[in-house]
Structures are given as C-alpha cells and as structure tokens.
Figure 1 (tube, rainbow, N blue to C red):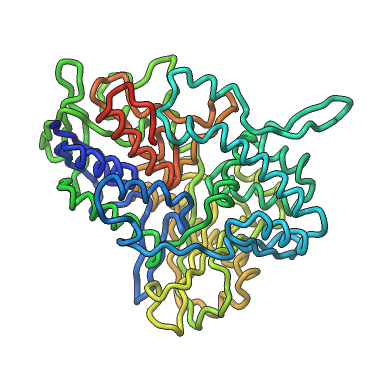
Figure 2: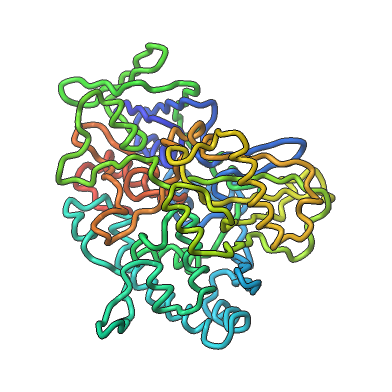
Length: 503
C-alpha cells in the first residue's frame, strides 16, 4: 500500500483518487481552493443556480465505468441522467433554424433536409460516416490508452478519410475542419454547424485538423446528456465516492513544490510550510507541474512537451435570472451562430473577443435551478481569448462583451433583456481563480495529425513516481477525457508501465 498525494480536486484528479483508493492505496488530495470540481462549478443566488462550466455531458460511459470500478452503487443510483432531445437547436446567420434529434442519424438527416434544403442532410450524414471512421481509428490511442512512446505515428497520420477535392488542376483532401466544411459540406450553415463544435472547445476551425471531426461525432453517436440538478452534481457524487473510499481531502492547501528523495517524487510542500510525505505524487497540468519540480525536466526532447496554457481559448459565461416561466418545448441548448464567420475567426487570431460571437444558450428544464415555476435560469457561453491574450479586467471589458452575448441570445429568446432580473458575468479571470489554468484557458480534447500540435504530454513523467492528470495532459480536455485521464493514471500506478489501457 503506497501513500499517494494528489494535487488538485478537479474531476480528473478525483477520478484517479477514487480508483487508487479502491486499489488499496492511501490517497490524500490537496486543493488550493475551498471546494472540489475544478472548472465544474455552480453559481447560486436568490434561489437561482447555474452551471458555470460544462452544461452538458457526452460519453457518460466514462463516468459509469468509474462508479462500476469503485463500488457497488452505479452512477444512475447517485444522479439522474437525462438524454436531451433535441440535442441542440441552431439559429444560423441567415435566420434559418433547425433542431437536431439526439443520437439519430436518420432524424438529423431529415431535419437538415427540411430546414436547409434537399441534399443538406445527406451531405451531413455522409460526413458523419467518415467521422465515425476517424473515431474508430483514433479512439483507443487518443482516449483509452497511455500516450504511445511512438506518438509521432499519431502526429503524422490523419485518421479522417477526406473526400478527394479537385482544385486548380490538383486533387487535394481536407486537412482542416474548415476545409471539410468548404469542400465536403458546401453550405455555410452546415459549415457553421461543424465549426461550432470546435469553437466550443476554443479551437480555431482553420487550424484544427480534419480529425476534429470526432467532436460532432461523439455528440451524435453517444448522445447529449444532462445531469438533473446541473452538471455540478456529477462532481459532487464523484467527490462523495472518493470520501466513501477513504480519500482524504485538504482544502485551502496550496502546493508550492514537489519534493524528491533519491531521484523520486517523495511528497509535497505546502504554502504554509507543511510537508506532506508520499511515495507517489499525482500532479496537475504539466505546465504548472513543471514549476513545482524546481529545475527538473518532466519530459525529454523525444516527448510531447507541455505548452503554455494561456495560448488556448477561454470562455465568458453569463448567468441570467429571468422572470417568467420557461415556455413548453424550449430546447435545452440553442447555438446562435455568429453573423460573420470570417470576422469571428479573425478576431481570435488577433487575440480579441469577437464583436458578434457565436453564443451557446442553455435553458435546462430543471426545477432545482430556479426559485419557482414563474422564473427561469439561463446560461450563455461564448469562446474568447484567454486572460493572457486579452485584459478581461479592463473597465467595461466583461460587461460590454456580455451585452453582445445577450443581444445574440435574443435571436433565440425574444424579449430576453426585458425578462432579466439580474445577471452574473464570469470571464477567464474567474476560470483562472477556480482552476489555476494560466489566463483561465480551457483545454480541448487531444486530436491526431497536425504534427502533434493537438496532443498533450503523457501522464507519466521522467521523474519516477510523478504523474500528471487532468485536461492539460493526455488525453486532453472535456469531461469524458478528464475521466479517462484519471483512469489512465490509476492504471499506470496500479499495473505499472506495462499498462496498455482501459478495457
């Protein structure tokens, strides 16, 4: 039985802690804030509650597996999972609207044909078939296995089977998500639908590899799910599962250094001078973990090296407390697409928030989130540059951008401003305070191809006994990937370096 110290109480770290405790280890978690969950937070006021991190869940099987592997009580005995239908409603720049059924290819094809014209649904359906092939080729090495030592194979091979495209007497294949939209989907609204999945993770569709086709495929194939009471409830039950398995939590405990003995990780030093001895250390993101090891290199020149977190996108969240009941049949999630795609993407390249952003509108039909049936809780989310690229603390910066988000959201909810009792605006500054991520950036899932630009460092490091977990290490960001990160770290510790992945 080993003593294991875990830095941070994010969802990935807790997933690792629960699995390690079940394996018989003594696990202690040191979290610098006063609560668990990392980016999976909740804002509450006047009887209203809001998810300020992820609003929906894909691949719930990752979390079901955690509960199966750590106890007799399954996930559905702890929370109620609801499949959202439609999975999303889309309001395009030209005013066209479409609601997409959840996890139904035939239903999606029919809905797109009816809304966008004959043939649109077929092109999207054909794209999903190719996206499935990309998923089948990359799922295991990018989600279920430790990062391969020969990771360059993943970097060099594009798993998406792009359709040949003849251009200027040459035949080319789409190498980026934007090229898939232009050459294969051939409709600006389908392109917007495709690219919105990348934007939600802070990815530039013109830079994201074609392999990013797996992002809409995950939602289509495995459904979109909501946790009754809010996604924060998922973090709560994972925390409670850790407590049930005797994991110790120390809140308000900021780690200032990883201690070493005889060349191995041997514990933690805390801001108050306390030393927590350990046989193994499970750390936070590699970029920040590198600052805690005092001159040691976590990775070699042949490894995927940590990149500054602040270069990734962040998000602005606007919590709206509304008077008036939620109308019957309202979609849980509506994506209001930017009226000018080119201008939105150009603004990201300049490190500035877009003048007219794409906005995700979440309207859960959940009594737990509102004081009574005569009020409604709504969350608006937009992807923005992180706090290292844009000063979100500048006077008026947050509120003026929130105004533009509300203006966009009124295309989905007419009269939104007149119904607003109050609002809470949260920027990358809040994300940085809650997660520690530089500039409040949010990690995207790992993606194949693009010379490894979208891969993350391995969970094991060059320092024996020191591991990295969470969205900034393999297999990247997002709730499913965070859960798998915890599973991979636990497997590497319990089974050793010969561990070949989750079954």
